[in-house]
View (cartoon, one colour):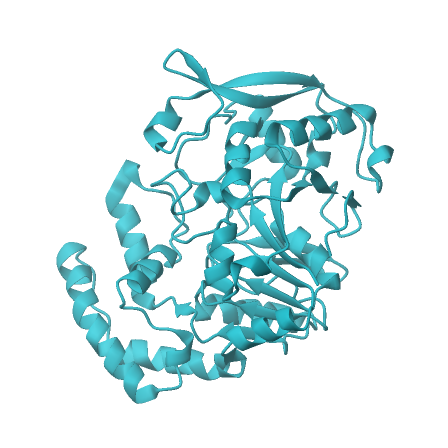
Length: 427
């Protein structure tokens, strides 16, 4: 038996979808444990190209049960559109399960997300405006509606009426927006609830039974550790716990049951939205990386900020999540570069540090200290064994192992499943 958590090691967008899709071939269950439709996992496989926002990336295997865990916030609109995309391609979704404990993103969450971002002007955080933050805020404030609440029509209407008596004054008096109708919100939620009802059930028994039976399982993370609500670059973070510890609560799993924690990291660094990013390249090199890798958000289409690999930040992620190994992705993007840099430290206020600061204001003042390595200027896309790669590409991978402090278990050299080197089997 093996339970593997796949966690983002940077600011998200590290290619976790491909890694989970690949591992799911041998897994009986994939559990998405955090985040919401603000996450976008792009998967290339024989069925085509898919951008998944809520459905776990293991959905393409008929033998794999896919669970949207209690730690996820679910947009019915996004999820139903995603299911239609899968159905149109002939993908069987009968083994998809939504936890009764998963919170629902309501229309007022999406509206408030947009209005709050707009009101901040230049101080906006750069959210996806998909209602994720307000939904998690209501979860903590005990004003949320969960998937398990949807069948109780009478109780659901009372709940919506109660919540809108709190939300509408905010919409009208603070933002000058029109109030929402209880009837309209209730009717839409009932319609969505009917369509999602076949998928909603208690998921904790399913997870427990799979573990007790010794079945291989993948826990699918969203975003990256540097966006974690506690350990990321606060306040420029997401609203949930996306590090490995979040998998325990989000999936309903006992901590000692996880065997491997696999950190997914790109061979360079990207970030979407506002917030400090020490290695960001605002020059031709950064644009070259963006164009070669087509670094545009799967959820919003926004261009991602690109830069050299930040070992200080990634080492911090490895520490707080306890990576047992890493999956290195997008190595092929660097195939044509004459030289490649790795940030091994920060210069701040006249001193050098290799520690990642907890304060975003301090991180904004940090300047990268680089180590430069020669590029390999040779394609890696056909390599299927580590020794098949160009020697300088091998040296780069080994150096990343040293500076991050974790072995590289998997190397991705292209978007498709087969463009992968498995240095150490995980499942």
